[in-house]
Length: 344
Image (cartoon, rainbow, N blue to C red; front, side):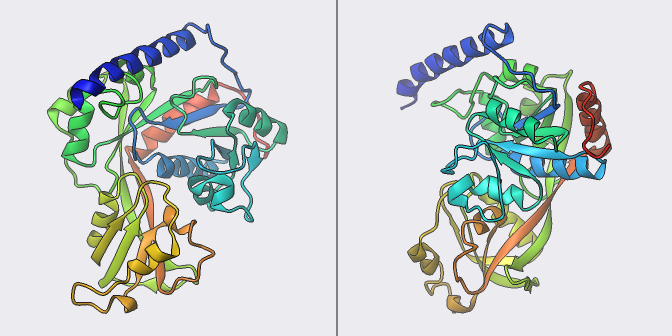
């Protein structure tokens, strides 16, 4: 199989590199918004903790007096946009991640990200745009390019060291040239910090002149839609539909919620009634009909209109280290473009 995929990866790399060459030389059109833009993205397929990072940046910018908005393509949503995500929207309308983010900050969904930026400009309400999953979207200029890299497991680090392009490996574009294009690099634990440095082989792939930061997870707790709190220790049934499920299950255990059953579905999966009911099939010596179901906040947005007993969503906060230096770099980067805050 690797022999079959290798030539496809070479062709893919040539196409991506040529596209980047055209953008680097400004031979393809790049739109420059009057509003400063921060791109949060990655260079590999799969979960790299982009969404919690975008939310953490939005929250800190608000604390510092800015009025940010997240611009998302609305993956798997039926609304092409541009449109502001409203409380009445469903995940079918705008996608699960935009609906999740809209619970904490303003979000605009637009398949055409340039049209989305122009839409935001016309609102005359926001002074920073956070471009979610925007690193490969070269049509929209940005002041800061942040790349988040999964370092949460030896396997993830090993695949990063290999640097193999799709469809042979996980890379969306060539590793070295893409990292050279970035401004800030986040090494994402994807779970609670284990306090271990990445391997020497992994560190050798990173550009020495780039600012490096670490992100990890702090458990918030398990809360039902009605506000009931699930206190540890407790046995639970855990399930999720995210790109990298292992850190979720590990974080639950570290918090004191012990999964007697773990089930992961493909990223962005829409749960059926039968799938939810099958989670409580009795096995393992527990009466699982009485056990709490625990999922991620991202999964919960797809279940909020379902009548599911004892369903709890597990909340987390994202920490960034060194935090102050990271946000000083962001503020300095967006300050290069002078935009008056709507509050001023």
